[in-house]
Length: 420
Image (cartoon, rainbow, N blue to C red; front, side, top):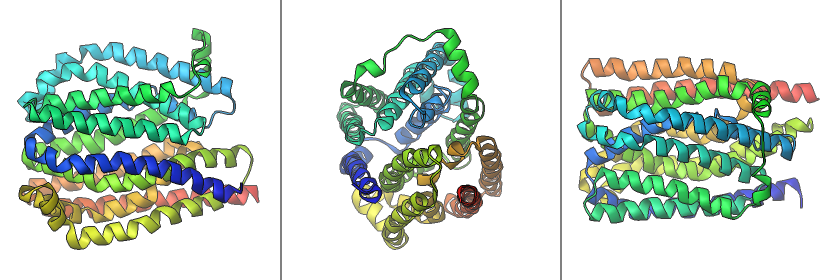
């Protein structure tokens, strides 16, 4: 089979699983928006933001080194080291309830306090899921990855709807999400060879692995932490405090459902791009062809999506989620520049990792987040309404993403010149 046919076969396999996993939440969305309040969605979003802030670094980001490790033994060492870090962070996170009152006051959400006791379980689930997902990705078992995503989606959305009908409120949403994480872990673990995932490793081996892959825990972890801190923790804090919890609830629901089609396409493409680019780098093959295929594939899908949002978003949200949610469509229209750049950047966002440019990537993102969040904070101080504030935020954020894209282009161009 040619490389091009192999690429598109892998893409279709990943896409099919992602399509099913995204159809499920879209099918259940009209139920969720009618049994949960806007405030419920806001509190749940704040909980996930706090959990993700720690969970994103729960393996020291070593999990993303698993698919590009040069051999099985190296990959196993990375797995063992990542799980070791996860155990440490989960143990430390049991002190998290001490800060529960602080976070509930910070987000103007008194209800949030009682749910933070579940943070250690959330961190454990994120760490384990990250490790096993990337191990399966290394094995190129794209069907297994798809099955895992579908299982997670069924449990998360189905259980959230069921518990919502029983009146569990935010607690139902959190429990549904946690259980879906572990279902995804078990589904993928069931379909892989256990012998390649279980092996004794000494502390010396773990130290050597940390030394060899130090950029992941030292730089990439900081980068990932900053991403979540800026795009969720701080962003949600600004919206909660300056615009209100109902506005945050509408924003996170809008964000979830407009990003879902983007993630549907780009996650399928990015997984393949990451492994194929790793092969190119390890074998001194030009990365230009895989880069062109990746960008052209994702861009082709972006055009109809963006057109639909620009002309029909308020009507679609109001018709599907209920008349109270029509404003979510207006929110979506204001962040179209961000969504368009997401289509292009998301599939190739692993380039700094592949080219050992994680430190520079972190500095660029740090500057970008400072500027974008400052723009939203400044307009909030002038008491602009949320729609106008989102317009400014969307424009500034897209400009930051363009800067990032240009840097990616320079890295690829330099690599191509080096090989040739």
